[in-house]
Length: 278
Image (cartoon, rainbow, N blue to C red; front, top):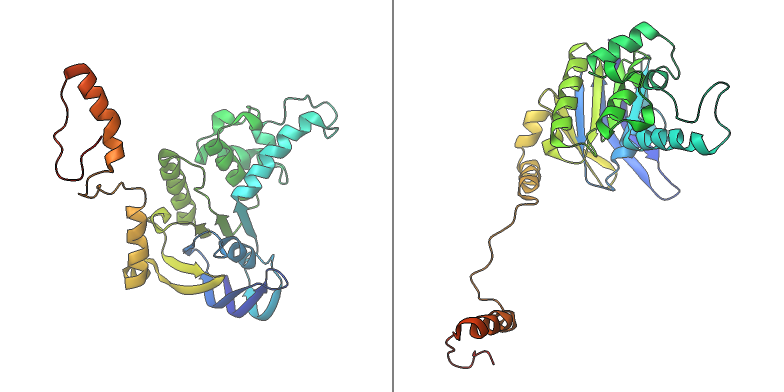
């Protein structure tokens, strides 16, 4: 069975920065999620797994035959390139200035109309194949790029922040599609910002911090660890408005209210001690 193994790996990021992976094995058909904050080295990990980073020391061995990495940045570049085609001399003979169709984007590298139609049906975008790619929504362009990647029939698919920029409904739909791909035997690696983005089907997980893969293991076991549980819990609290303290607001905040009330009703707040409002 195919696998990707890294042992005592140190990968070059710059002259002064490295990515460190002590040990990691991704097996055929497995599903992994790696979580880290911005700047933790998530995208670097994705590139290391796909073989795009220079290995300074240690070992990286892979017998996967087709590894494909996709990132949100690649999607943005693809959309930008399509819009730029209207303003340059990149147009092909016979191509008008409204851009390429979705089916052309999917078959950009691998021409197979039958497989293109099959993947479009799987991702629910069959009706978009004859639509101009640059006019698709973010979720639709994400599905199109995934179809493009799957044209090569990869046995390991690495997705860097696949849910970034999607609304809740689109995230749920994409997670279901990824579960379907996993069920077909494709090894999946998801690089994510948050623990609550990990889809239910994922088997294994890892944590990145300071460009070091610090924790790996079965997803449920990892999430039950005390520190990881605290981090996951803090995500649930993120964005929740906390109740205001019992202390009264500064006196100056009451002044416009007092004036408004006294001018319309003749009512004036009772003052006590030295805290009266004047």
